[in-house]
Length: 379
Image (cartoon, rainbow, N blue to C red; front, top):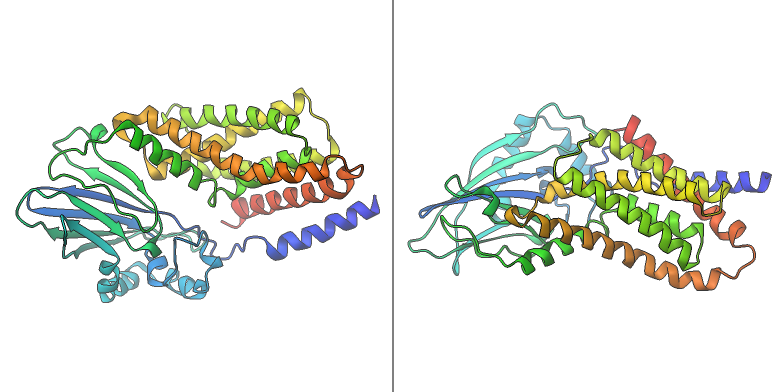
């Protein structure tokens, strides 16, 4: 018993030492671009964490600003008031505009910033959203418009806006870092195949597991360390998948609404529970499967928040929702496949529970507890 407690203490120190830093802990969110086109002008409305841009943080490879070498500079920018930050944006507008490539045909368009809106009175421990309004004159003709952002801005969401067209039929897309949008026609909707929409949302679902779904990955690892044999793992993952698929659909449809301030701490506690249960009740049964199903419902709500950032493809709502969910499952499989292969080496070990499952599950539980404290008391 004392040996187990000593091991628990050592792992707790490791989790604290190498766990996420909560001071100014800001997750890097994708830029969201609303684009409106007519025959003569293009208007862009960018919602972004502009401090990430000004600090020179590469959002394509950074999930949290604390992980960047420019973290201190980011924190200094974050402490600026709204007016000071707006002045800095104006002073560095050329740098920002150079990162936005709007083209009509083969011609790159000259953009200018027409308005800056900075979110005010935001807790320093939370990211601050800024909105930049940009405009450009379109050349004569009917050439469609494409949009690309600098790779360092990371992936972005583009949403076509047009008061004269059915909003459910307008172009919405999740664009990977360094890529450009499809050509958007002026004053008309973009015709897209269901297959292209399906593929786009599969890609988005994968991306929100690897690398963005760290808490989901840790939970899945908790299921794996319960037993390295594939049958118990398959049963648990199937139950978990069914549950989070249900709440993802219900929340995306707007039939279930729960605040992220409630869901995110509960997801952290689900990780704690799974880690502890691996240690004290290492047998699969109805009670464990019921717990996994319940926690799957919570994780589905978490995915719904993520999907809310990306949006759904209007009239292809069902296709995009199914595609996103399939992408999530592919991401899960990519996480589990190397684990299952390693399990072949562990499953016959007589002391697997003591030497592998207990320390790994302790670390998983401590990580979840750390996140719970962070999300409840330090955010």
